[in-house]
Image 1 (cartoon, helix red, strand yellow):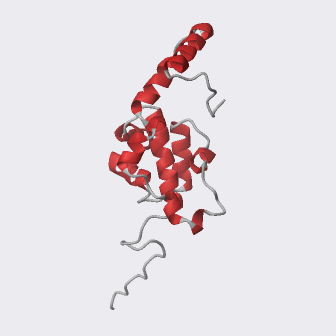
Image 2 (image 1 turned 30 degrees about the vertical axis):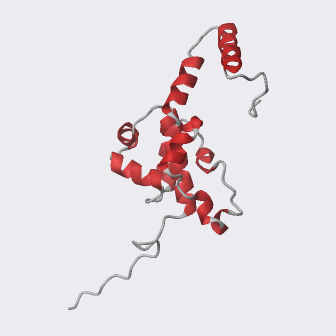
Image 3 (image 1 turned 180 degrees about the vertical axis):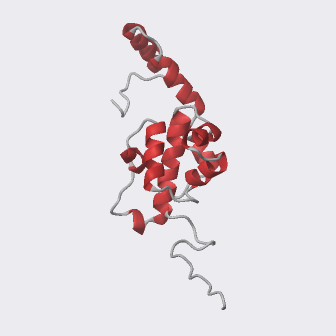
Length: 153
């Protein structure tokens, strides 16, 4: 009785590039993990994975299944929709380069993704007195040379 070789499961071939949506979702996992100051190892422990598996999710090399995405949303304290934010679902398949993982220097140059920013925002919100917090905000704007309003306001 000869063993028949199982047909290969459909999906990504070994040399194929990750799906742009998987890359985007992974980058959102990385963004939120960094915002919370969690290491890949700590996030992995919280959801029963190794840090290498978290790394692969963040790069988009491994696709995140629905149940795992639910676990991540619970541990990272965000709705599942957070992982798809800033993505144009109509154009996503047509522009794979639009979701390419940013180069390391681009990632580091984005001030919203730096650890320093996360720590600063975290410290800011630990100030209990709203009036004092507002004065610190006004001081930071003055030091930055701007009475102009920020785009987020």
